[in-house]
Each structure stands twice: as structure tokens, then as C-alpha cells.
Image (spheres, rainbow, N blue to C red):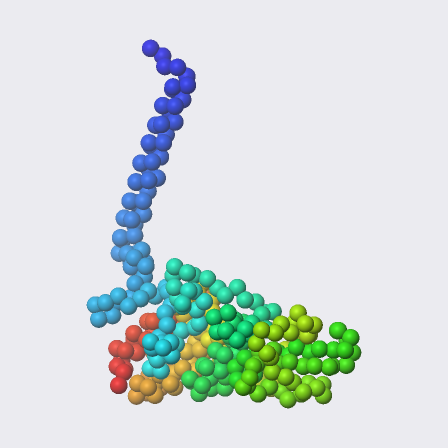
Length: 293
């Protein structure tokens, strides 16, 4: 007996669903899982986990902070680059800050929870902190000595032109001292929390200052990666940390530099990206070679 055409079509569709469910919902996932268990691939399939002393301490693909309970850097360890992922290196909240080159004016409300630093001030503060921690020159162009963006709001008599009538250091509040005493003959004021000097007509004017064009603190030490999870730092950032780490561990700086070199990877395929130092793996090697005193 011949089945009606509509029923034949439904049965054919059902058979196709069953076949593809088995192939794509069972066979394919099991095949991938089996491939992931092959020697040399099993570690990557499990997340490239790193173990030390029989315990899992992290992943070679995800960075982590080496700080104390108060968030201060632990001096005996190499420090990672900043992270904007959640509270820092949170794989469930991977993200960047979404701040760009024009983010130079802080939001100062007088309330720590609602105030927000501009990207420029974040960079300035980080550079100052790294300079103090590692004993290098932390100055950067367009940064004040106290670690905020060196930005003025300049008010002119005719809006965009005319004589200067008022100047405000928009990222500095009392009790700070203005990073320049005067601008074009007009005394520089400190910002008042809650005031929007840009909306009031002030012209945003970054001041370069006398910092070197090539700062001692490299860019990756003061900026987060796009994902917020980068486990690497640049060889340049690792180099300025060698003296501190060696001093804290009572080790020969040359020996610490050799460890840095051993944990430095080259460019992908020889031409893509930049060399990097895996911070977690380097710090584990340090703990093994030079246990903390």
C-alpha cells in the first residue's frame, strides 16, 4: 500500500533529523573529545592548566595578578599587565575598558563610587606606580608628577578665540598643587568636584610636559589587553622588573635574566605578533630556582 505523499515527506524528514542528530549530536562531539585525548593535545583540550606541587595554579593561556590581599604587588614576583576583565583576569567577564585616545578628562564627583578615571589618568597612575616599584623613571608625556592626566580647561573671552580668562587643571582637586602655576599668564585653578568644565565652554588642552618621548615604563605595563586575559608581558617590561625580583629573592640578577630569556616566546610563525614572557610560568620557575626568603 502506497503511503500518502505528505506522510512520506514527514517520514523522510524524521529520518534526516535522526541521522543528523546521531552524527552531529553524538558522533562528532565524541570524535572531538577523542582527538583531545591524543598525546600532546590533552593538555590543550583541558585548558592548558599549569600545576605546581601537585596543585593546579592556573592556565598558561589566562593571566593572573600577583598581589597581596590589599591589591598591592608582591615584590618577589614579576607583575602582569593590567586587566579590565571584571576584577582582573576574570574569564567570565573578559572585556576591555572601551576607553580611547580622547578619554583624557576624569569624572570627578567627590564620591569614589561615581567618580571615574580617564584612560590618560589610568595610564599616568600606573606608570607612576611601576616607576616607584621598580626604581625607574615613571614619567610619561601628558602626565602630572602626581600621576593624573596633565589636562587644562582653557576659557577664552570669545569662546574659541580671544584672550585667556580662566584655566582649570581638570584632573586635579584639592589638596593637590596645580602641575603648572599659570598658563598664558593666567593662574591655574584646581578642579571642583561635580563641575563639568568642558560643558561650561573650556577648551580641553593636554600639556606634554618634560617627560622623555620614550618612557622607561613600556606600554604593556600601563594598558590592559583587549581581552583582559593576556598572560604575557613584553621582554621590556620583564627587564625593568629583574633588579627588584633578584633583590627580593637574594638571587643573581644575571640568573634571573636567564630565566626570563628561557620563558620568552618569539613571534607566531616568525613574523606575527611580538615576543612575550609568560608571567605565571616565569614566577613558578623563580619559586623553584630561588625560593622566597
